[in-house]
Image 1: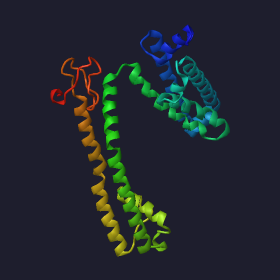
Image 2: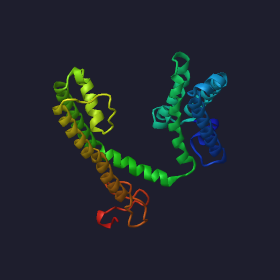
Image 3: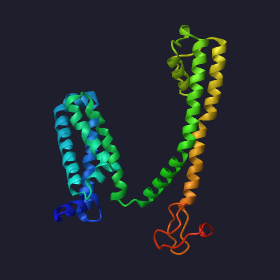
Image 4: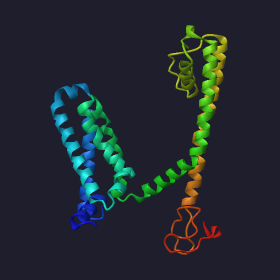
Length: 271
């Protein structure tokens, strides 16, 4: 059973429907931005040499503030374990760890940029429901595309492994293809049309194989885009379905009842 203090803290920290809650969230976003800015500036050699002490103090303060905030979230949560293992709970924890990691590992503080993910809270704070709606459509499309893209990527990995091995046999050490993994790396760079140029075939047969791989690369680049685009269109259409009685959005095509008014849904009545 939560105490009155815990309930008050929970409303301020987890919700933004009060003046104190909005102020807390906005201050949190400002602190997150400042902490990310300090880490970015620390990576600039001239700035680091001049303000190293100030940056380290600032990072220590930010880490302490985020630690206190995380502790308050756990303390005020009705079900602490549910928050700890939730998406935002894990992100909040990951945002703290780099600050302490930097004490033992040089450069560990740069992982603090993970805190940028916490800026997703701005959609809830500013009530940007339209962005949340679009985000749900994107999530649905990516989830529906997962298996198709997995099969596609498996095929691509198989292809570059075969072609990389063939190139190793054809070219060998004299052209820089010193091993099969190096040859597969070349195949990946080539099929993605990146083309670093650090390794290249010199024999006519090797150049022919490289040309074929480049043409294949142009053909397969559009495949993931096409898969996701189709699922995006489908998810958008599903999101537009309305309840025939209350006109509320039907979030899933498999729903049998409206979540708002309880009306039995019939697909022939859905838009």
